[in-house]
View 1 (cartoon, one colour):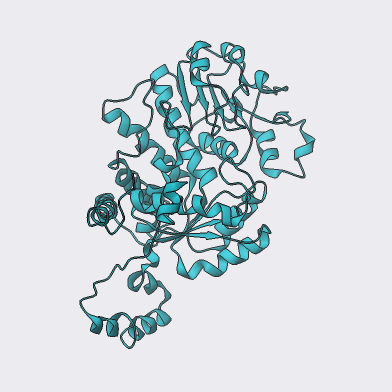
View 2: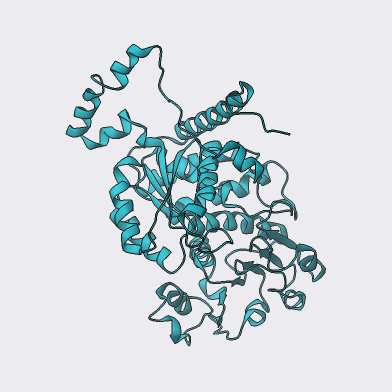
Length: 427
């Protein structure tokens, strides 16, 4: 609290252009600014050449599901959105603007974001409650010309896939063959299921469980009120399992839990019912569904959580800055699941190539900034391959662009601190 109050926010606006003297404002403002305005009026695509739109993302929320705090409103959500903007800049070189909307009406949110589109190169939806988050994401992805994603869905799915890829290497199992229990059927786990299937998992081997039990075709309560869950009722769980969490977990190879804070949501005896060398991702925050040491005592071979004070933190921040970096650098019109999957593969490969892959090191840490341009280049290349890019750039071009802009963002912050322009943290 003391540091948040001391700095009074995490982001500020600083010039990108040179200001050699007051005469330069005749270039940057009137009369010189009229020329790029007229050029853009003749060709709207030139806005990416003459303004900062090419590198600017809106972080949009209604404050209806903030972290583990629930519906705390748009003002109370602003510290989180500022933190998100800081991560965007420091890890991805992306200029992000927090936008907290004073409405919870999905149609108003959609309409407002559509009106904001001319100022931004992409939209990051954040901390919006389900089920409206699905409708908002789907509509905006279809109706906007710029990439829109929901980090709680796609970002969580990408980093979870990365961790699972490496976990399966360590236990010598294949994604296409393993049985996976997903505990919690919120926005994150529903998207994780979709990403896993696209990445090669057998849909029939995936078992999802929500607060009312395992998803299966008998869950008629979902058909009208929750189409996203109903889709999973029909496409997953080939065995037709029923029951609750213990029945979902029994005989599986991996558990991915994003449900409610624990401990005690997952019990040790349920992990003992899993197959040989079980993998447990207990990612509820602030307290995982089962403590890591309890999962290990029950026989879990590999354990991951969402926390930084335990090994194997599964953290969205490892991927969203880079995925947007790569998307912006090719002016992508969308962020596809395939773009998320290549980012996940880069995260997994980086750890292995560094020779650090182990039961307690599945994914990189945020300090390893070198992984971000690798992801960005892979994402941009995939966007070009899929035909969703507005401009074509080679992998090497994209890698160098990302590395340069991320390095610049971090060096700028360090320089401002060294010069005292960002005040020193008080004792």
